[in-house]
Image (tube, rainbow, N blue to C red; front, side, top):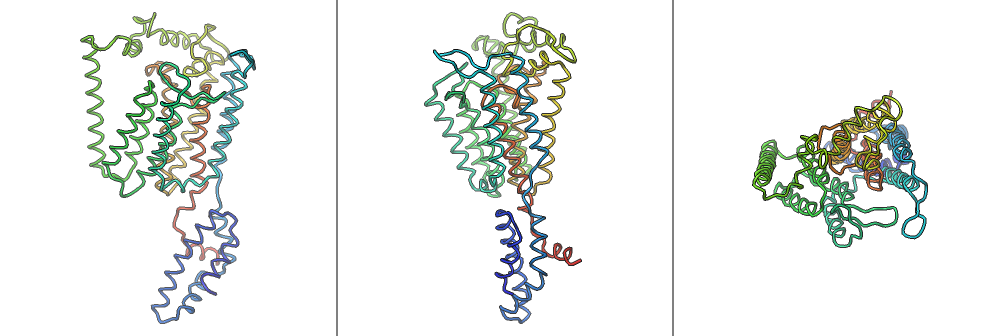
Length: 442
């Protein structure tokens, strides 16, 4: 039997199209090496092919074995967590007790609950769609994804039709396109670039500079925080040397410290208006700024002190209850027990992400999951942290629970990427055919 005939017989027993191409390529490579080995012993090419084929054992048995080993997987635990979180994400909106429709702009339009249903359907669809999309096709498209993300930001700045507190967006019905949408695209871009052996440090520096300049035009420090964390973590997990990482880390730390010192002295000299750092001062000393920048911190402190384990606590209206301070809204509306339960469920998503990272052999796949962990956990930890008074209040969403198109779809996109990597985690390992053959022969 020739190598071609043997391969066709083996892959006939493999159901997955993705697995078929992978197994065929790996098996062909292995058999070609075996063939060359037999030819060096004096066998003709046809005889060597027959020897290589017989050496592999029964193609039927091997094909069935490889079909089981390389069958695409579904991370049912992560998918179940996603479904559970999407169902629980209705809780903050239900507590608001808003009507299904409201009268605005001269006609009736869907209100929070109706819009959230659409957000969830879209988010779940995005997650499932990405799961079935082969993430490995993105591995050579790092610059392409970087360009798409950068052009999207430029397009947003050029053609936005809505603006809130300096943050531009394109509003299309119930969908708001914001700068946040570029973050997962940059995640794929940096994962692809940092997984390359020949990616130069100077190129990374130039691209980081370009992207930070683009983000700086948007009045949203939370995006800079998350994007900075994303690039920093992926860089530390990249294939650059420890020396290069140490130099870059030291330079960035020096820049941050210099900026803080410059900002503080500028404030002391009166060259920076008080409102520019008033929120920070309100965080450190909320009682002295209770009528201004410290008001929200005082409000959250009172909320936590008046919270019950079960059921509603304080009754005053919490600003931004459905968006930035949704975790405080959950505590106020349902009690500490419910909030802790939601905290645990969101933490389990991160734990599952970490578990998947350890089981993936492909460097690009590991970096994608690492990037998703960074984006998801930075939002999650900061949103909870500012509710309990550990960090200053900024505009940042609690994944899935904050109302809006982006908090739901963006984080569903992250879970979809992780599901895609998990589904194909066996496709990038070396095909140990002799071991499989020996196992089958028993």
